[in-house]
Image 1 (cartoon, rainbow, N blue to C red):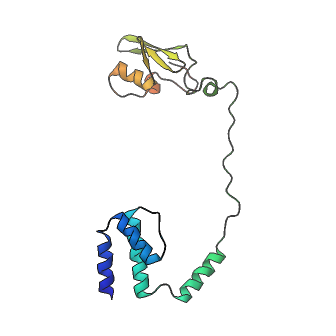
Image 2: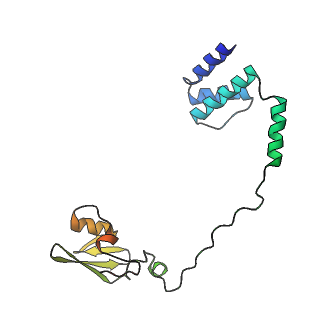
Image 3: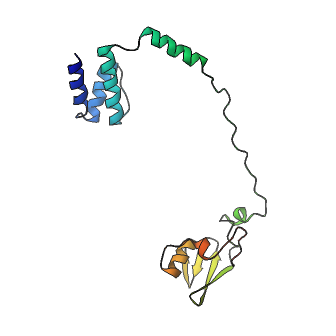
Length: 163
C-alpha cells in the first residue's frame, strides 16, 4: 500500500495546476481556488498519506486542543508607535521634498576639478547647465560621469546647508 502512495505522490509532480486542482477536489471533497503548484502537491500528498496510514490519533487531537486552549491569545492589538508631528516650519512639509535640500530657487555650488558647479533647485527637480534633472544624484552623475549620491557629492547636511 505504501508503494501505491509513493507512486501517486510521484505522479503529482508531473501534473498541471488544473489537474492538481481536480485531484484536490477528489481527495478533500471540496474545490480550491489555490493555483500554487508546490502547495497543491504538498497538500494532496499529505492527504493521501493521511488517508492511507491514518490521521492523527484521538489522543494527539485532544492534546493539540489542550495546547490551543492554554495558549495566551492577544485580545488587544499592539500599540503602534506614536506619530511624530512635523513642525509647521519644516522644509519637508513646506515644499514636499527632502529636508536636507534648501528651498526651491536657491543654488547649490560645488568646486569640482577646478570648476564651480552650480545647480538651481526647482520646485520639481534640479537645473544644471540649462538641463532639468529629476534627482540630485542624476546631476552628480552628469558632472562626474559615474553613479554618485547627490547629497554626498554636494555635501548637504541635515539642515540643508551646502558646504
